Length: 338
Image (cartoon, rainbow, N blue to C red; front, top):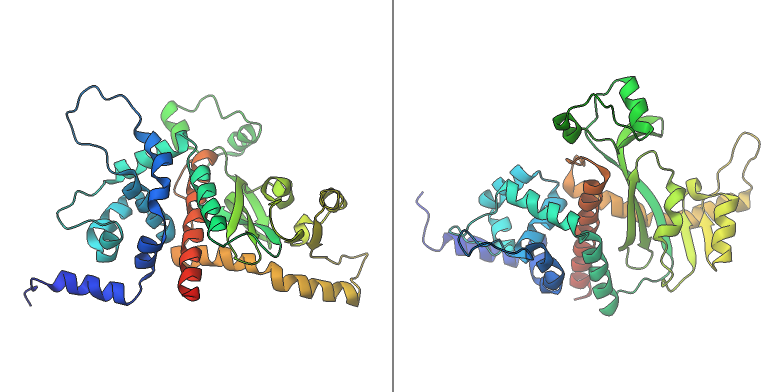
């Protein structure tokens, strides 16, 4: 069948009427709010006006958000923009528009890293949420999830040197660039995983990620508790699983005015009372909301694995993933309210 003149417009109209997720992101997110912060990536003296001008920074940010939502590599992202009508519509590209290639996408993300822009954009959007009625309310939940990275095939001696902060001297420059010396092994639920951790703090009411940190997977969850707590939450309740429970943490939080609502865990020498088990059940109904956040990130992206090397670039990717989740959550709540 030969395509008609208006077939593309008809399909775009169908996408808009179906209230596609990307259509909501396109229209409800205040993209221009980020332009001033992003323009710094192009603040480089040009030797001449020859050559192609850089792609618009908002277009590139939207590409990175798409990439985070669907967990696509740079090459796959380039292909999908050219192939998928919904992606083109979201990015305001026509069939005749130039499409950033994989190298351009990589370079833009690299510049965000060098200018430390991802966390600033994340906080700017959080400020926008608070100014538009989505304040952090009803307490906060903290937890960490492991984000897998490609396993490094090192020898035992090489791993020992890496753990001491001294990568093997006999590695060539090319090999060093391809080796991740920041990711670590950890065991959870009797299962070994290799990668980093996304430590997140979520508000109970809106279920937005209000702050986050990224560490090697071997870092204990409780070690970054202080860094991600939100003093501006309307409630001082702090929910977390038993990994955060220690006399030191409880004493520190209470001294700061917080109310720790951590899960209690029985052991060989101590069994929980019925009252403690009931407290666990009550707190778990709230604490589980952060699992919905991590679940949402995994559900859309599928096999969640970071295709990057080093903790610095991992922070950029995970920061973009948390930002993409907050944007999707905002669109959902706005549509639900409407």
